[in-house]
Image 1 (cartoon, rainbow, N blue to C red):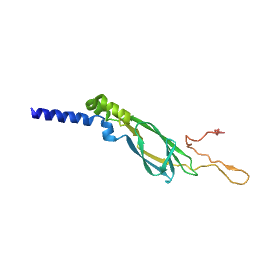
Image 2: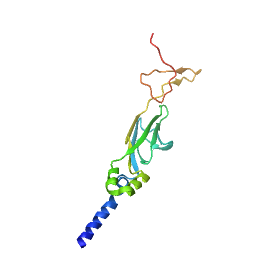
Image 3: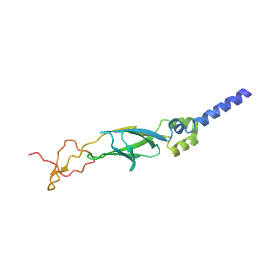
Image 4: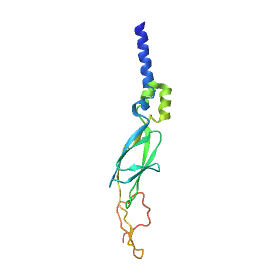
Amino acid sequence: MIHRSISRLVVGASILGLAACGTIMQGSKQGIAISSTPSGARLFVDGQEAGITPAIYQMPRKGTHVVRIEMDGYQPYELPITRSVSGWVAGNLVFGGLIGLAVDASTGGMYKLSPDQVTATLQPVRAASDGQGGAIQVVMVQQASPLWEKVGQLQPE
């Protein structure tokens, strides 16, 4: 009789312990490693200044985010951080049921963010004024940044 009670207690504790698997195993935030070349650039997450590169930024798993890296003399770099459902949700379906699923959904523990590492190579600004009479130097590139505004297209002769 006592053996049966202990077994039930262990099974019950295991089920409760595994409820909200994602929150327990991963937490509600995920560290995203962010670096840039050159280093020392300003880091923004969701429009808020968040530090200097390189950095590991703890992002809430609950939403999607935008990382922006800026440095004087360089084009800004921007990258979305998206979320997807984590494998820990399966643990909730088996052991935690709706309670575990609800906890993980409310804390963000059911999600993983990607990419989990951001490496930005900042591109120098290529147009500059000479400071005398307003002349502008324009440099053509084969691979344009998607952040640049296209103002013309060269046609072959």
